[in-house]
Amino acid sequence: MRITRVLGAALLALGLAAGPAAADSSPSPGASDDGKAPTQAGTSFRTATEIEQGQQATASASTGDYLYWSFPADTGQRPTVKATVKLPDTHGSQTWQLDVYDGLRRRQACQYGAATRTAGQGTASVELACVLRTVRGWSEPWAADPLPGTYYVRLTVVDLGVSDLGKPVGAEVRVDSKDMGGAAAVDGSLGKPLVPGIAVKSEEDKDGSKTAVLSSFGSDDGWSSGWWSDRWVWTAIGGVLAALAGIGGYALTRGSGRPSNVPPGV
Image (cartoon, rainbow, N blue to C red; front, side, top):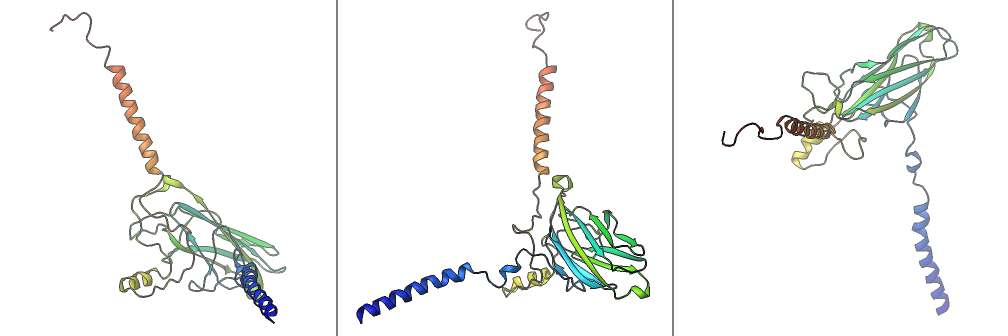
């Protein structure tokens, strides 16, 4: 009987030890979704689907719908938004447009790229692109310069025939950025990035109560808005080179000392 109890306790201990290991090795219900791009789009600014830079987001919709996505952009980045609309087999001429808005919902101008395109009758797809200006760390209140925070992408058709309204379409959106470095740096920085819910969070922080943030994404290392940029490195290098040039110029122009034809004491 004692041996049976000992064996039962040993088997129970092994089961308890193996249980967590087995649970840890099996993926959690939400783990399978990590790293996957979204397959649907929002219908307004408030319901915009969040995507990360470098993700290929897709969505199925009907012609005439407004499709919204949102993505984060930080200081020194120059985002490029690309969208592809897959049209039905039979359709008339229709014009699609890609708009990008900042965290204050101000429409941002494209440096270059075809943000509006017309697809002729029978065209299988239409491609749109918008290269934004470089995100600045600081700006005047009256300016519409791009600032760090959340950006919204809106894709919709702006001109089509009545017979094409409501036909199924497919959309693909991708956002990539190029780091412009200190060449685009400016003095000053924002107190907070322009992300949804940041005002609510700031107000509640003062009272010590719970914070409410509506945006769940951002830079893993935090927003980089600040006074530092690689422009300071190049400024320091330029100062050192200027000092060396001054020393070299003085050494070349000061001569060898007192002229030999001048008598002492003069």
